[in-house]
Length: 353
Ligand code: PLP
Image 1 (cartoon, rainbow, N blue to C red):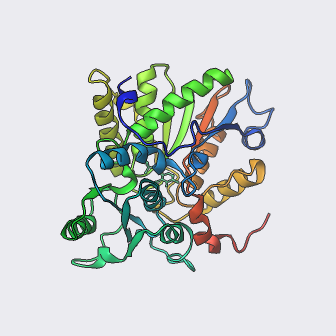
Image 2: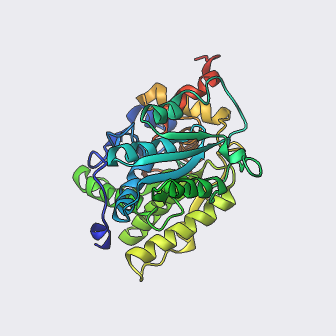
Image 3: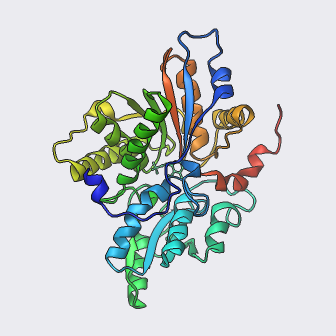
């Protein structure tokens, strides 16, 4: 109920669709392999908004941009990697809200495939008129590198906006470590519960990719608040799972407190599987590519090599190894990310069946 009172902007289409994945289900869990059968559905957060291909960041930003407007801010300032979905989403919501966007794009990924800094997300940000700052993390003391924490380069940009007479609204990496960062995905869980009533199904297991942590944290808060015992399993794609888990826990507890001071988030609700990040943020491994191919070749679900390919690999393995058992109804929360795919085309040049 408190959630309904917190101001947000109408950047989403409405509820994002939930889609059955029958061919992927059969490929992972053939009819003879378990009884009763597992079902797999996807919550299509990649199709959640008309703004620049949407995705999980837009769902979070509906709350943050309302707050920016309430504080009469003129510019959104944020940070991400060169192919950040988040900075593309910040630029998109800034355009839609009539604000300026200044985004620090750091070299978070230890690879440099062809056109990495020209195509995909960064191209979209430029197209939308964003003030895209590549490499400024290198000024004054070296590149800060991948990290889900707060960055010096964004502080400098905020000062610069102020010096020019504007009012910056700082959004941390992934719109996560922010008072309002977890709200979007609490809302998503409320939305899922409503769709379940219409579909006549209960998703006992929810799979979600986790890096800066607030998508995962919001879903956990939503699940704990409902009290129906559903499990939210985060799949780490940060390559630094201890930091991600700490941040998920902190955001989940702060978000719960904001919504209901009596809502406790137990340690047992924070599940982060660290087997699928392939060692490093932003670089796909063989299991990532295989999972992407399987999802694409069964139900034509397109995932990216940085985030969703890794959570897809996680879901496939959890089902194959039996951690997700017979009769389970699995919901894969697809958080978006496809715009980065073209920047990774070199990983798919020597494709075989
Ligand atoms: N999936 C996609 C497509 C993303 O852009 C991100 C962003 O980091 C994530 C998953 C991870 O979400 P979060 O940062 O909220 O943990």
